[in-house]
Length: 615
Image (cartoon, one colour):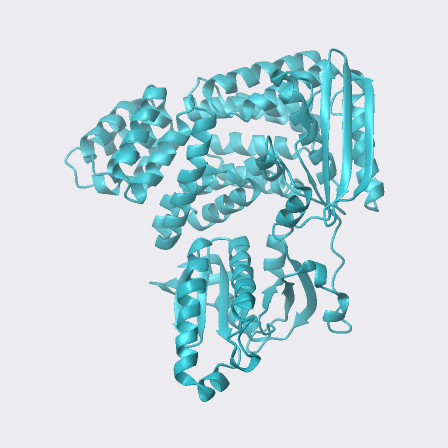
């Protein structure tokens, strides 16, 4: 079986010399480093040790970011552990990381991806990390690391040259002189994280407006090819929390941070904004805008263009036209749209219904408002998908088509259409639209999440895993993708990844359930993860809680059946399946047939009756 994977190869520098000097001491020291540091860090980052080769190891990771973060953690800690050790007796690792195609054979892996990782490791510096171009591209600005371009390298027994980057563990100390002459590092894009603007209105009900301003500034900045912008879902993990700007800069590896506040009172709005140097905390620019509410788009445009000027970013001709382009001329329509978007983020039947009303009101006020049409399409898709509302897929397609007719480059509209196409099982068309949405906005969480879901429905498990993993990178609090990866990892034989995904998913689901106790989804998904790690009592408790919150919800029934099956409570699982399948759509029935959660029911006398309901 083939799959795409992040591969880490490591070995000890000068191992033969160390063994010649002190064989017993070297072996004991290496064993201690592995026990106290290396193995734990690999497990912490979700890695799987594939093989050990004396002084070296080969490790597979579900995520490129996890692989590089693990390598950096190990090398930083090894520096600390070696401080008091004489240089000629130090054990120092060199590490190579590559993202590539591998062949899986039982517990072992082979192929070009493994070979390239092993060859990159041989040219890494002592105590350092070297990575391939695909690794560097996928990590982006997500880690507090600097990548120094060494150019294309000819690696032994690898046909094509590979672009290799050295990783600096201390970006502030990195310099151009560290790079070989003639292979100067590519200039990194200016980068920015836009923190959630504070709601200063004294009214929690106005939170939607400050959040909306933040999201729209992120959207405008993301349209600029010369600027790297952290995704909305990542920065919103700081919402409502005390923030240290320099910590934000380090976490996201960005040069600048924008923070601000919004006060909306009647038809007046006051917005403050300050652009801060993330490395030293100094202010690069700050301003305050006291305007009529009708000037809101002009304010956003001024902030965006000021950031562009401050960071000396050159706009392409087409970017000059679209940056700051008002989505609507009607401020009331915009206000309804922001309210709808806030409701949409809360993910429940009642909120989807409320969101649809807000988007519909926005369209009523401005029939040319493309984003509002996209919002309506999403609400209808979610109500159809999660709650089996009597909504025609063709109607959803027509709504998303209207959005694209009005604004063809709107990534959200392409994602909306892709979701509707996947609901109609028109998967090749859906895939094209998903890819277009991601090309327009690589940080669009919904595109990755629903593309993963459609891939799983088709049995494309490797693709589904990659897309869910990318969704998690975009949205760090994404409990859904973490837990939905569990059956995929099981089917792919990635057993160690299951435990990591389950534990992360439980922690995130618990936090979500505390925030939204009326939503059954974190309860039933969290229950399935608890079942995976053997916490039987809590799994049953969470399942009961989900069924109590919304006993008539088909998705709740389906997922509760999954949990009961995992717990080998066959009768309640079969009862729930028998109850929901007569009302289920084709996709849900397809999931029943292929979902490995139900494997323990296959030998039960009632299973054949379930299959009859599926067909």
